[in-house]
Image 1 (cartoon, helix red, strand yellow):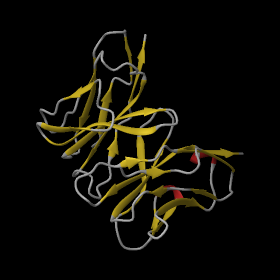
Image 2 (tube, rainbow over the protein chains, first blue to last red):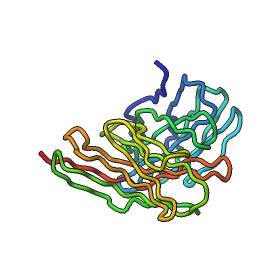
Image 3 (cartoon, rainbow over the protein chains, first blue to last red):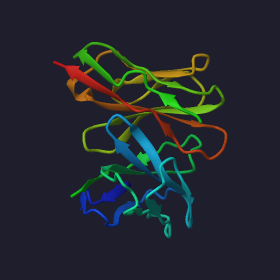
Image 4 (tube, rainbow over the protein chains, first blue to last red):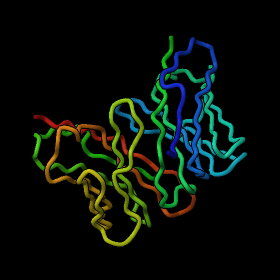
Length: 114
Length: 114
């Protein structure tokens, strides 16, 4: 079945460490997105990419970085510059850059600071 | 900036009672509207979408929503809820002004009481 796979499901990070969250899709979607979810805050956009080798900052990009070397993959790195990284991270994809196309979501990665 | 407001952060309702979850958005220009549901520790699942045409949209699990352009609203309804409907519900909007990602509301937690 086609879908979006996020790994790992749970991730722990020590202070000062970078950590990379994986997102892979086999839906042949052009666009991919990363969101951060905190209780009572809804989903906030970190980065998105509408085509390979191109990506744009979302509303809360500081302390995060991404790459889009392959259509299927959009990894997110949480750097040590992100002062409050504990959150639930969701990856999504869609056929095009948002014009009426629904986004499909992975099951998320929960990141915690040790 | 465009915004989405979900007026209720929590909605408790008795089983088999009707429910309405409210959503308003900030602009009346052309929009695409979505409702998603999230069960604990999972990603978001699409319930329904409005792209054009009939203002009453039917989705999965017996949910429906009505697009009201003059009131810039897209409220979600179900005539009779079940325990299994307990979840968080998100309204999302994209504006037909370019390749813009979805903007999400902060969510409404629906709790169905037996």
